[in-house]
Image 1 (cartoon, rainbow, N blue to C red):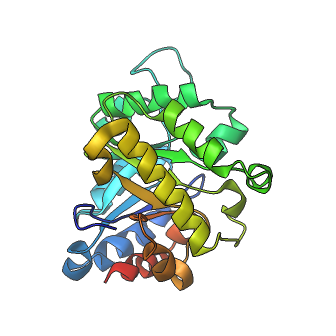
Image 2: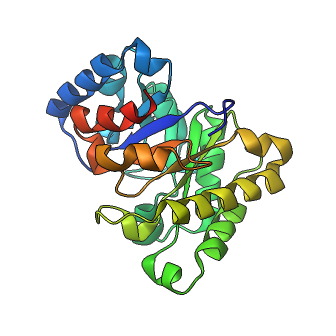
Length: 251
């Protein structure tokens, strides 16, 4: 991680969290003290039902984001949420292209790009997720897949100010499995090269997060890898102790 890239530790609560979970968010906000704030950005992406309440709870600089958005600003799209709606609720970020959306909702790179464009349109910092499946890794196609996802999912107008990339090996999400630090370094260095190829010198400033069974016990080792600028955390972001434990890797 270079000095020009401020680390980001982002929590994706997925389909977890009722109003009672705001107590954990409050504990996270309380634990995000001046010493930690000086070192790292913290973000929590709760379910959409909690975004507005989370914004009111996280008043210490802890950012709140959405987990997904529709490509359109409004319309007859029952059950969907636009990037503008998230911004109106106080969100500052949105995640697009998470592997679970790509897999279970058959989202293509083109769909992810359209959603990323929506995020930029609504002035949300947009986290674009990329990553390979176990079968793709075993076939030696990791860099090919990740490169194709970056090329097809990154919106025009992307910059270090509005885009974050999250690399999440699909086979490591929620499984307890993690790639070796050498594996992580290889992919993150490849992503950095792809970003500078696409954005020129501006690609140097784009933050690249690692996501895939990050927990307090392995955070320091993973966060020390070259071109790893933070983490996209799943299950461990549901409790303040674990989430702050991961962020403490930067203390």
